Length: 172
Image 1 (cartoon, rainbow, N blue to C red):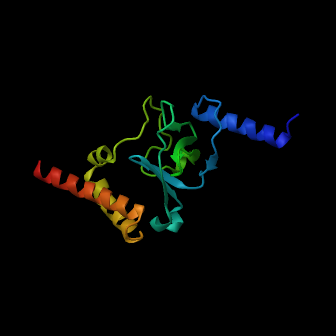
Image 2: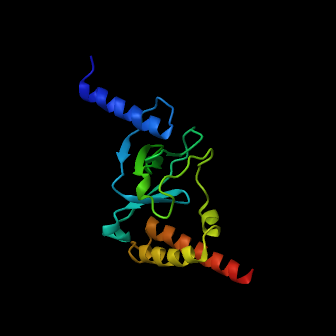
């Protein structure tokens, strides 16, 4: 007979998977990130506490190497995202509170294809106000990044895309 704590864990995991519509018997590590504000930016999920400021934000690439038809599973209250650990082919499921999603509707509607979007497509869809805010946000991130780090390269890439989009709109 299994221990009641393990049964509770298995029941809770089944409830979480059911909430977001995930139907598989696979067991991946689960991380509760519901205390954080979060959003999806291209192929990345970014999260952090508003009081800590942007220099204390975390980011993870959305893991797309598994055979599932989705990589983001939005539910009524929670969203489950497969996040790449950056080590081999390892990943985990991160759960976020939909009410704490920044810059989006409080509860995203499930889509049939929620695979990652190229960041270039995300930038093209931004309003002029969002581009101005993006400049401010990504410059702040870049200024707080270690030179040559992955974060610095990522923020530089996004800033370049924002600049190119401004030029494209100006000359159109």
